[in-house]
Length: 187
Picture 1 (spheres, helix red, strand yellow):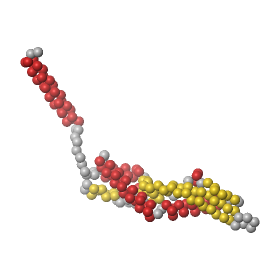
Picture 2 (cartoon, rainbow, N blue to C red; picture 1 turned 120 degrees about the vertical axis):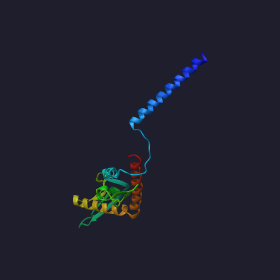
Picture 3 (cartoon, helix red, strand yellow; picture 1 turned 45 degrees about the vertical axis):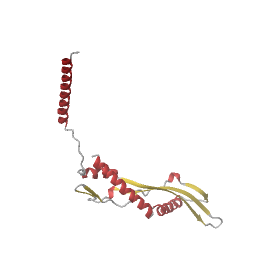
Picture 4 (cartoon, helix red, strand yellow; picture 1 turned 30 degrees about the horizontal axis):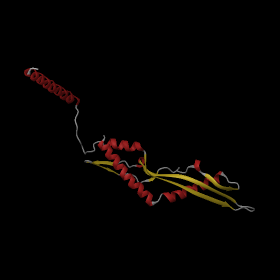
């Protein structure tokens, strides 16, 4: 092979490569593609909307069961009823209870003032799982309803403790921080 011919082929290949690179650079410039990192949170309204769309955010779930019994003394015999109640109490934040100015932007920071962690649903008793453990005598629906209310009260006392609320509050702070950071990093 001729040395002059191979030089011409190499020069032609280099020219084609330079032409392709120049053409790609021109095309990418038209697409407006750029890479940059910003630590600023510019989309506070977007954050507010996305957090409001969550509605309620659960941070701690506590399951409980209570054995409730009652005795009604009669003339000839006593009526007895014992039932097992199951409940799942969910602690979290209800975003519909946020104040108007609950989220504010201050430079590159966001200040969020959330409502306190609370029981998200008062209907935490699982009536489908409720079972009569022992039943003797005649009992009305009103009697059973009163027992269910006792079970709910005891579950609230047992599960809505300062410790559980503190755990849920700590989880809330961590999760909301992660959420806002993710929104900032992935607008």
